[in-house]
Image (cartoon, rainbow, N blue to C red; front, side, top):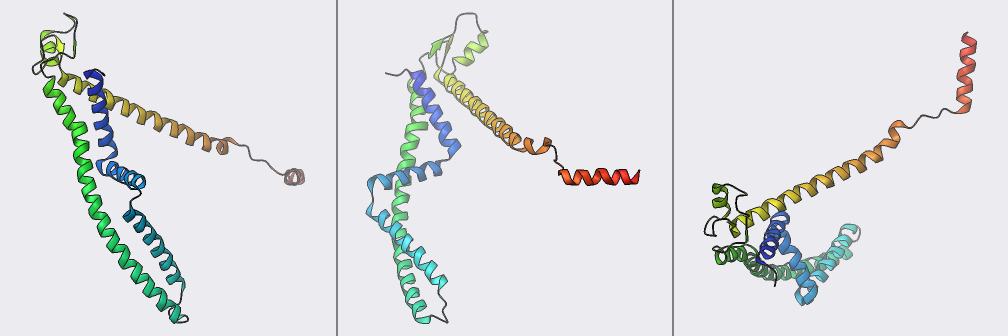
Length: 216
């Protein structure tokens, strides 16, 4: 079984990822995966209606209401009918998605912040690990063991804060490295055009030399 230290770190990492990406984005990705895996009949029908609606709209825009009135009127009726069916299907799908978002949000909170709260409460009196005696002064030992861990140890609350700080540090470092790599790549693309010498055609060069001789 994984240690409490590792579980706490993973939970803190998941919380950071959700906060960085955004809860709405996570819900949208999970909803897309859910509809694809379950092959929901309503979702398939909605996608088919949307495709048909866009096709009819394109044909309707390409048809003149004056020159081809009969064809335009027929397309208009089909367009309005499909649009009504699509909106009805979309309302039902939106209702299902709202319920899905509520369930996913609750499960996500239980698996991240809820689990972290449970771990902090359950292991609040236990030492995550011990600090060698004399390494830090008394007030530092007291802070590291806050609130109820044995003095001279690191409490789970202090470990959570340390995990959050390390994850944030690595996140900033990765962003900085990516920015430097992108800047270096863009500068390499620009550099060849800067220092490239301008070639002068041979005929033009000869004309310029003859003109200089005449002036002399």
